[in-house]
Length: 161
Image (cartoon, rainbow, N blue to C red):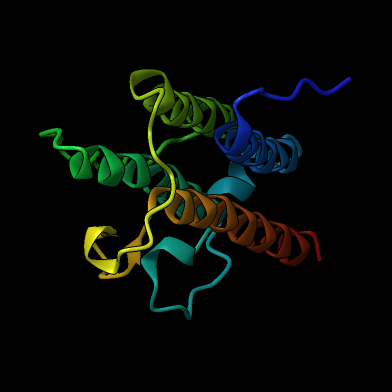
């Protein structure tokens, strides 16, 4: 039986984030290392969307970046993580789990973190220029995972035809 976190909105966000990542990890369980690195979309101008490998590299880095943006907004002096290309499906599955633990650590470090902010001037301005409160940024992170899981599934259809 599924265990749910008892942290209200934070628990719900973490549960859904973990669920989304679990879905990606499950999709990857049938992906060979050859399919991982195969260029599926050679026409895209987005280098993060050429293969399952480039998608996962992007997803993991973004997952860290969302939390780093929050930590920076809280006054931490912290650098963004570098993009790290991995060579196996197993490494990506492990890295996805590690990235999620980094997200969980935010709420251990800041147990009274206020999720909502209505004043646009107090919202976090992220690297791509959008303004988010913490809840919105984490919701974006979850949907980001879902969108790229769908993209990976579509790539697998192409690779299997």
